[in-house]
Image (cartoon, rainbow, N blue to C red; front, top):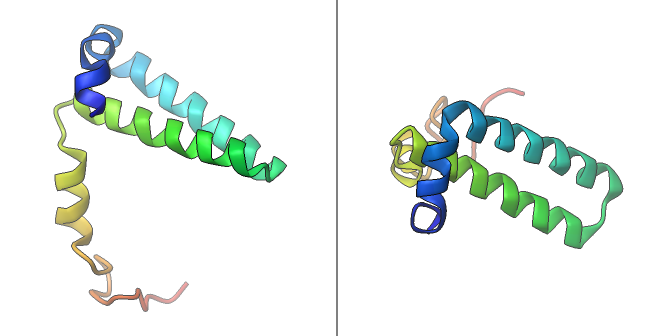
Length: 87
């Protein structure tokens, strides 16, 4: 979805510009976590996810495939579900 919506704009912005937007959105998420406003939290989580997907698109990484490949319903370190790694 993010590729269809924004890829041409994101590609023009480039890796560094898109990465900077992601960082800004993560900072806004941090602020929302401190404020504990549910609506704001949901908006900022969505923004972080969107910009992460946009950055993955710019560098030609299939984010869903990468996540499933690494995690595949188990912890990549201990191999368990739920994770049983020491903290």
